[in-house]
Amino acid sequence: MKKSVFLFLSALAVTFYGCSSDDDGTETVVQAAFVNQAVNLTAAQTPVNIAFSSPTTSAGTITVTLEPTNVVYGTDFTTTPAATGTTVTIPYTAGATTASFSFAKLIDATEGQAKNVKFTISVISQAGIEIPTATNFVQLNFNEVAVSTNTTIAENGGNRVPNAVYVDFSSGAETAVSRVGWELGFYSGSDFRVVLNSAVNKLAVKQLATTNIDEVQVADANVTTGNYDPAGVGYIDNPSGNLSGTSIAAISATDSDNKVYLVNLGQEAATTAATGTSTALTGADRGWKKIRILRSGSDNKLQYANIDATTHTEVIISKNTAYNHSFFSLVNGATVTTAEPQKDKWDIVLKPFMNYTELSPGQNVSYFFGDFVITNSLAGTRAYEVLTSSVAYANFALANVTTANFETTAAADRRAIGSNWRSTVPLAVKTDRFYVVKDVAGNIYKLKFTSLLSTASERGTTTFEYVKLN
Image 1 (cartoon, one colour):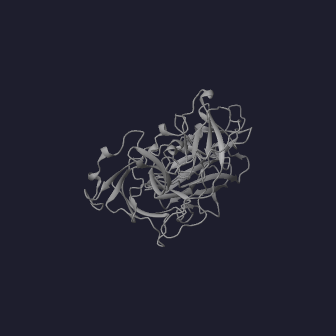
Image 2: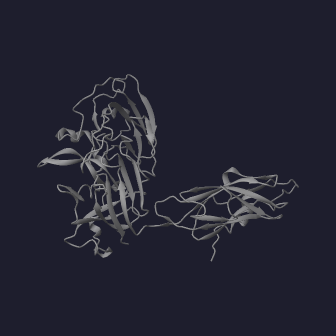
Image 3: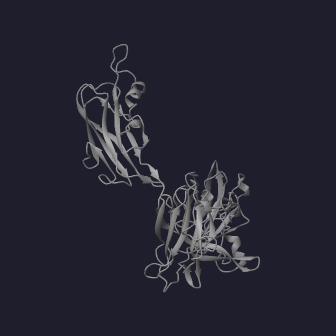
């Protein structure tokens, strides 16, 4: 049965636009518009109506342009009348109060994917009919259905590992971005915290005693990390992902409390590939900056400069609650909008990662891992490990899930998977374990890693599979 989500448009048009003439006989301007600007599609066939504010005086046509997002005309959707290029021409009769076309949805979108088609009124053949700008369009959104099983390959770009790969289980989507594309992430929640990019080797910050960003500074070779020096852990964020452990102190509402920081920008991704099954993680040094961060209302104000400069650049970093953070590149002097997907559109990320490792009992040092898996714990993704000695992966079902194993605190450790899924001596995936992951929507998956090498036996390519349990 066809279901129309626009059946009420004609009635609404009367109240929206008013009568066709005033009491004094003055004729009201006739308009044509979509009443709804966004609709979620729930049927395979959907009539889409355009309402006139008063009956048309003659027959004519309305031309609408279509703008598809992640869908293809003829493959994922069609219209009646059929489109010609990027336009659909819709006929109407004299005395009509609506003009309509039919939209056929041929596929469903999976959760986390943006699939839609926007239609905009561009031309009306009958003279004298106005097109209100605010209501001249409608966006038809496809349904979302969670992926139940998937085997996927995360392409980090080979053994130089230049990419971070974000994976959304429910949509099956993978997003690969440059792992060195930003240095500072400004938290989008109510707290004023700034994180460092843990995928940039040697990136480190040190708080200085001054609040004067224009004071000349010098490079400090001791401000580095990943070198087995216990002092290095003070120059990076706590790798658990807990915001209380950022190396940059919480940004105070009192400007005089916010100090200048010396920033070692770390290293670029390597330009020369490694040999055999090793990774190449050491690239060119990127130099130094100095920064100072203040509050600006509900946003952040970043001041930055070269360390020998006596003037600085200032930029406002606005919070965007659709993301965990707003990102900035000190190297390029620009905000970065492609650093990671929206916070509810990814579950794990595979990338190089600056972690702690224990040098001696109770003594941590920093170490840069080439293939590390972190969960989106800040947004609410949770994970725990299961050993096959207790239950085989194939037999693991929803009834085997231990809810208490999902950390409930906001400070849940994002390293629940970490590097535990593989060994380096010998270099192999550990087959005695798998993982249970609960995403922000409450979907629960079992996750098993199957390979950390490409078919050419090269690092930087990880294969894994997962199954939805609920």
